[in-house]
Amino acid sequence: MAKPIRALDTKLIHVGEPEPPIGGAVSMPIFQSATFETRRQTGYHDQRYARLSNTPNHEALHAKLSAVENAEAALVTGSGMAAISAALFSLLGAGDHMLAQNCLYGGTHGLLTAELARLGVAVDFVDGNQPASWEPLVRPTTRLFYVETMTNPLLEVGDLEAVTRFCREHGLASVVDNTLASPVNFRPVELGFDLSLHSGTKYLNGHSDIVAGAIIGRAALVARANRTLNHLGGALDPHACFLLHRGMKTLGLRVRQHNQNALEVARFLEASPKVARVNYAGLPSHRQHERARRLFEGFGGLLSFELKGGPAAATRLIEAVSLPYVAPSLGGVESLITRPAATSHAGIPADERRRMGISDGLIRLSVGLEAAEDLIEDLSRALETC
Image (cartoon, rainbow, N blue to C red; front, top):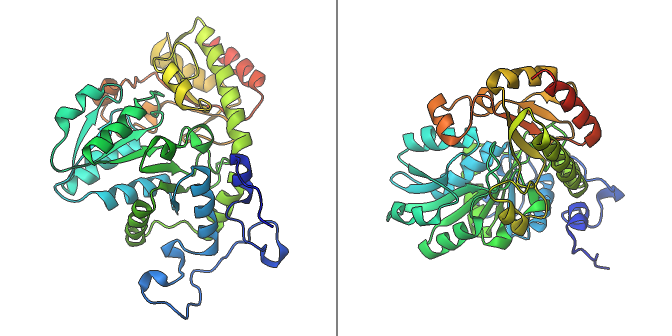
């Protein structure tokens, strides 16, 4: 009897599970094997081998990930950067050109400006909110447009509808990093994006205990990325597959609580006389609040803010909080706090960070699943030192 699987939460639990369950196991087993017996292969990619991302653990994840974003196909990778690099390297070559939203995650920015530039790929950074400025930058060699659903760490929400429309009109691949929203809050393929990328380290897994990535979208483009990933060697190991698979089953519950907690914390910070600015799309004061309301089902668990006391006050606050861990990354059950200028964007020159709007005093807070009242009380005490 077929299972009625329509809602996202049902997909997260049931899609991709072995049918019938292997040995009756309700939980997906870990196939801790690098290689598998194959008798009828017709080519290299017909082999079942862990580096080729086609073990039972990989295939279960691929089915689940594609289903939750209503896409044709998916691929898991050894990290979020492995997902980004495999996707971009599969679509770009020497002499090609791409457009990219300004103020991207620091690792992505470094990949574009160092590695892709070294390989002969040209990049123009654009304002995601100014579609009229994109047209003059298109070249005969332009191949794709890269954006983030919400930028890290300023939480800008670009004109995503205009991006997909622009790409269709100019025959470009549209690629979006959907990590901060997660499939619970936004499903890019539904808006017309060709590829949706994730750091599975973050919300998809949700427990800060693995590093993983994902590529989701059109089957032909995912297959190209898969071939590139096979050569780069960025496969996800079976045990990490198991942990990601397990973590995804609670994704809906976790992200909705992240949404609620972050909104409460953002409102508290915005009301504080010590805070100069809060970046969170769930606040009516956010420049793209109405766009975010229209596109997203929630605003995520990440926010950033600046104190009126500048970098010195930011340092005092970070030293004074007790619940958030002072650590990079985001999307786990525990709250994490950091200064992007000293962590995720430290590799970007200071003057370029300032042009991007990332001050030395900017604080990024990944709001976890602790009780919101406890987080607010902790932040309130820490703000007294500022």
